[in-house]
Length: 71
Image (cartoon, rainbow, N blue to C red; front, top):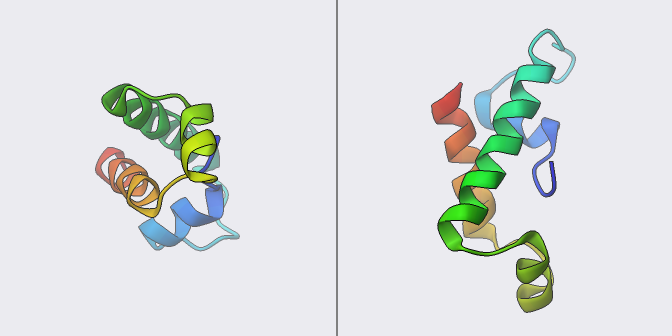
């Protein structure tokens, strides 16, 4: 994942950090969510970094919402 972390995803989903049974699946959901956001915005990760210095908060939140929908 480029901007989401597993701990952020677990916080969003209210999963204990020490519960690791679904970590691989959650990571796949995070990667997919980031890809969908990049495709939808017609941007690359580097575009966001170059233009904003970081991933904008609404983009991060949208990514977490997509993960929650997938879960």
